[in-house]
Length: 278
Image 1 (tube, rainbow, N blue to C red):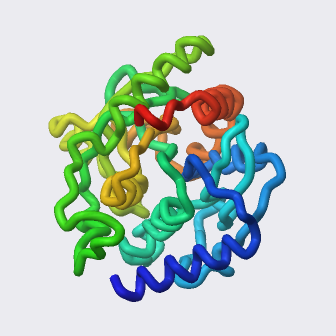
Image 2: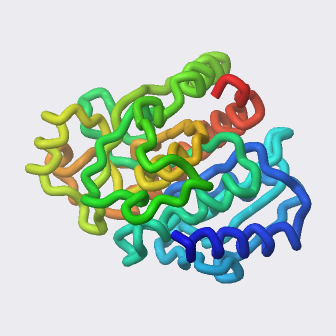
């Protein structure tokens, strides 16, 4: 963790040399959702390779850079491409982007992902506000010595997905006429998709959607005392529910199909969230 603190300090210096802007909101964009970063005004781009300790995003659809600028009238920092545990990086490395945005000044996070729908009423193209999660990744980014400057040894996770931000998000969606659902997100490590038996288990456990990301980042943000609004784009039906085999192409195709609605919602949320109530 001493090394982590040093690397975070170095990363802050790299970003500060390129822009004096202090972000209000940090965004993490999932598979097929990176297009939102293209809407940032007066953007400053920082490639991950220029940030000490940062991994390189290897997943198709993840550009691998930090974007800072204005979005919907708010100062933002956006991870255009996230890191995954299945890429071979440690949990500590997968959360470095969230840690950096928090150290840069972000007061809240909007974290998105593409997920497989488990609950019967969740169909490809639906947007789901994450209410809670089930960590089946077999690890936790806080394992190891705690760094007190980042957060407490034993952070409370009972409101990891801010109730206040979800209430605001539902109101914004209603004003826009966008239907949003709500549910519990579960994550395995991947990169293989889940088996039908695993999906049946998740259904018993109370999971509504499943993916391979988000949970480490949310744990890190909660550790730092920063509220999170999580949104899943239901990109496909989970294994065993649909007779069709799962593929990453289906994930990106669905994200492309709903990009207008998804973009409209996130832009309105970024512009309208009351961070004091987050």
